[in-house]
Image (cartoon, rainbow over all chains, first blue to last red; front, side, top):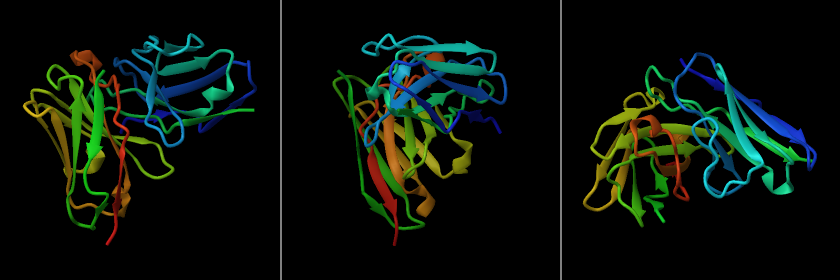
Length: 108
Length: 121
C-alpha cells in the first residue's frame, strides 16, 4: 500500500531554519499539502499545491518538491511555530488521500 | 467566511453505527469536494473519505467498506456513517472542505473544530 513518511520530531532554536521532509514510497502526480496543528485545535493549511502559501500564512513558511520528497521549510522559526506538522500527499493511482504520521516541531 | 460544524453523539456502543453531521454555514456545499478526517487520541490524522457535491465518493480502504458519506445540498449538510464500530474508532472526527476543481480534491480548508466520539459500552 502507498505510504507517506515524515520524521516524528524536529528541534530547532528560535531564529534558525526548520526543515521537515516527507517522502512517498511511490511517485505521485498529486499536489502535496502541509498542515499545522496546535494542541486542542483543528489543523490549518500552511502550504498548498506543493509550494503555495495560503492567505494569512507568514512568509517564513515555504514548500518545495523533488521527486517523491516534499519539504516544509520554516525560516527564522518563532516560538509560536511549535506545533505538529502533517504532510499530505495523495496517491495518484487511486486518488486516496494519505497523511504522513506527523512531525512534532519543538522550538528550544 | 465558510464555517463547518460537526455534530453527533459523543458516545457510541461497540458494534453500533457512528453517525455524524457536518453543517456548512457562510457558503454553499455546491461546487466543492468535502472530506472527513479523524484523529485518535495522541495519534496522527487519518483520512476517512471524500465526497463531491454531486455525490461521487472515495473512501480509505482501511475502513473495509464500513463507511459511507452523503451530502444534502438543500440543507448544506454532510453526513458520515461508520458501521460496526469498535474502541479503535474512538477519535476526534473532523469535516473539511476540499477544492472546487478535480485537481484540488485534497486541498483541505477550512476545517471544522472537530467532535470527539468515544466507543464504549
